[in-house]
Figure (cartoon, rainbow, N blue to C red):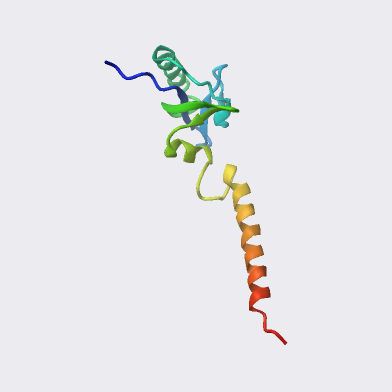
Length: 122
């Protein structure tokens, strides 16, 4: 007996920037996983993947990734896909730039707290 189809999204990397992108309902690429089309059957998945592959002037490496319906749109199932939604892990640009600023503020707060705790008492 064949396994039941797991819902999917079409994902790839933008050719020029390298960003992770997802195919939306209109056949355009979005960088927001929640805006991707959640595909519910194998025939549609095959067609959408062929459509994506034909856009080699915009993307590279299109494939189907498992996803589930979430309150704001499709959500990744596997760790790898969840990791890809956050962008490059080098913090230099893109989606993770805000995280870097946040970590810097947290480190400064910890450092300030440490100075107060370690300061000599008169």
